[in-house]
Length: 340
Image (cartoon, rainbow, N blue to C red; front, side, top):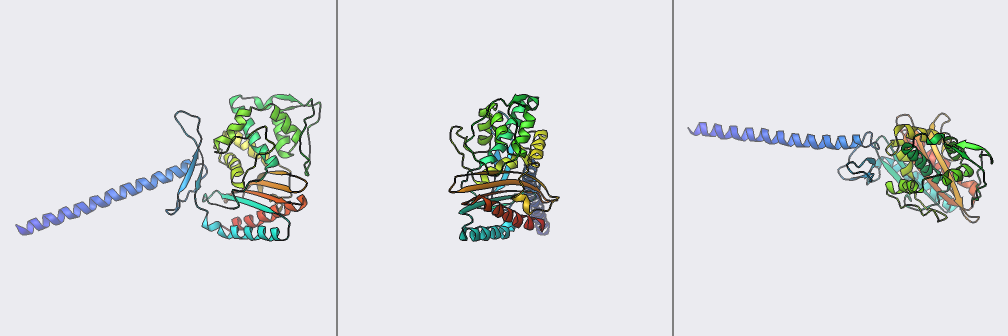
């Protein structure tokens, strides 16, 4: 009888252990699957890697009653595998500061395969200059989604716009007295950084939608009466990520926008250090005064199976020297990424 009781007790213990292990496996698997599905649903984390020691944050878009679309996902910690490239960039910046080429510089890098990021002075503010043409581009494509056919609308360039800018880099421009479609004007604005096309578009833009592009990614709405809107390298990168992720515009319009950015004809910065065949979508911006110049550039680099986005912002006395700094930072990042 005692033997029977002992066997019965042992059987109960074994069954309990099996049940406990089964329950643990179920919830562990379910939790892992949920995390995987969350990462998969985030267009900014194609192969999302979670780190138990580092939390992550999700940026969602407001304005809907039943949904909150994901714009992008970020880990709160910098990527360990990008620590070497960070140190190299920091050394380069410090060396250029010592010899007086720059007074300051910032860089933000986001790689897409592992969702990692790193940066230097990522929250320091710079004057974006023509980088602001990217949110203007996004605004018009958002307007087009609400009003299909807008890109084919003709606009007359019949008056000279007073633009308080003296760009060092000049290219093609629209001609006074001619008419252009919105599509053509967007091309001039992005490919040639034409301020006349930009001004004509701005005069016909939904200003509330323009402000909303900023607030949707968590930035302060720009004061359109203010002469400048200082931004950090991290902040501007949001706009490039929206386009690469196709998380804000339709796939069609995101593709159209990045294709336009691939036609930007500024060759002296980020792309100057890349192999000729490298596919790049980028935009540059210049700003500053006669005493201090600024050059910034942001780009999506389509490096084989390791795409990434990089934003570099520089400040110094001589504008002619700033593209070299941007070029060398880009070269360091490319070399690191191509070896991963």
